[in-house]
Amino acid sequence: MTSTDLHDDPAGRAVFRPGAPWLDDRGKHLQVHGGGIIKLDDVYYWFGEDRSKDNDPGKRYVGCYSSKDLVHWTFRNQVLKLADPEDFGPGWVLERPKVFYNAKTGKYVMYMHVDGKAPGSTSPYSIASVGVAVCDTVDGDYTYVHKFRPFGCESRDIGQFIDDDGTAYLIFEDRPSLGFHIARLSDDYMTVEKDICLIEAPIEGGAVVHYEGLYYVVGSALTGWNPNPNKYATATSLEGPWSDFQDIAPPETNTYGSQSTMLLKVVGNQATTVIFMADIWKPDTQWDSRYLWMPLEIGRGKMWLPEPKEWTLDLKTGLAEVFTHDT
Ligand code: GAL
Image (cartoon, rainbow, N blue to C red; front, side, top):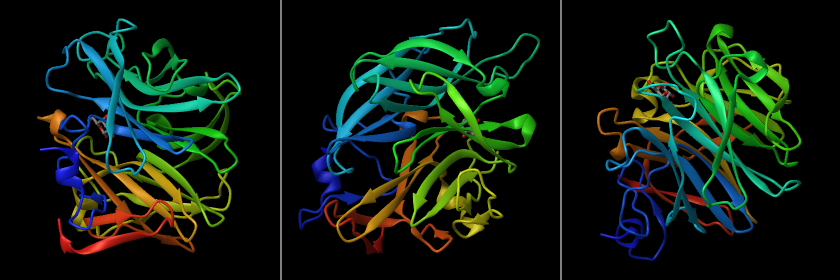
């Protein structure tokens, strides 16, 4: 089976199929778990955890794919094939990689959650740091640079936000503060420069979008691989104040079994669609973890994730059409 068989309808429209296997140009399921997307000219690049079954278990991998329509993805490279870079020890963690392009330096800068057992701890999530890797090309082999704790804070799940003015932000969850931060990156993106806001809510899988003059933040509760009701809040500026958090979907669906990773804004000549990008984790068969992408109902301070169904997006107009049948 190829991606065309699975992802085009009889009318030739590219179709998103939430929860279905999502195949690349080679017919392999996409390996971009906990991922993020950047757009360069008219090409989208999707980066995420590559958890292919045949990966070397001692290494951690980041996959990169490209697309012009967000449905058909071409495998580019395993851009990171990293052996334990810091002596984290067995079971070390590399999760939620995100790549930023820095126009000033011409470098591609990857952020990721790196983790392992801190001395004296039994938890493989006790080092709680961000790692940084760089590359001269978007899909080349990235070089690991270093790890750090942003502003000295613990950092687990990370998210990426690029505002309409091009400013780049890292979102990171900080357990001791019972919240998560939005941090502006430094000029060269190699570190964080300003702690814009600590949102005091226990949220991970954090993602932000700027839509019609309002910032929307979305994220999940802290239940590991198990899905929970994801929630959103709004503010007129990233500094806040932020509204209370509200459900994005009927709470009993646990976000239809998914967890947020990014909000992707597609601006067309008639409409702007914001895509909720989420992971449907399969902790015991991670290579088969699925993706749930749906266009959000968003505006005037409200955000709602409709029940997942097949849908299509016209990238020129920006209009999404959700089909009436179930997936
Ligand atoms: C989730 C987190 C994932 C992964 C998982 C491990 O809460 O969002 O990225 O860290 O926990 O249990």
